[in-house]
Image (cartoon, rainbow, N blue to C red; front, top):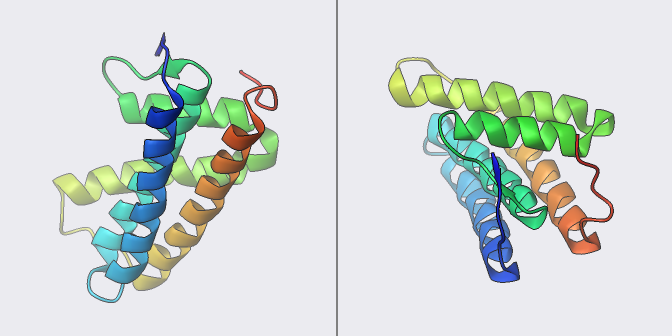
Length: 138
C-alpha cells in the first residue's frame, strides 16, 4: 500500500458502486447464488477501497484485494473482527469460484454474505461520513 490523495468524488463513487453492487447481489441470488456471492464480495471490496482512499492510502502491487482486507481489519478493529474475518473468507472463496467454478456456494451462504456485505458497507460509509478522525490506523 502507498500514501495517495483522493478527492471526495472518488471516495463517494466507490461507496455508490458498493451500494449498487449490494442491490445487484440481492436481485441476482434467485438466479445465480454463486455470482450473487461474488457481487456481495465486490461490494465489500469497493467499500474497503473507499475507506483506504478516505484515509489517504491505496493498495499497490501484488495481492491488492488482501491488502484492502488487511487494511480494513486494522482500521475497523476488534469490534468488527468477525465481519472482517468473513470479508477475508469471502475473498478466498470468491477467488476459488472465479478460477474453479465447480465449487458450489449455497443460497443460504450467498444470502448471509449479502447481509454481511450490507453491514460492512454501512459501517464504512458511516465512518467516512464522520471523517477520518474516528478511524484508527493499525
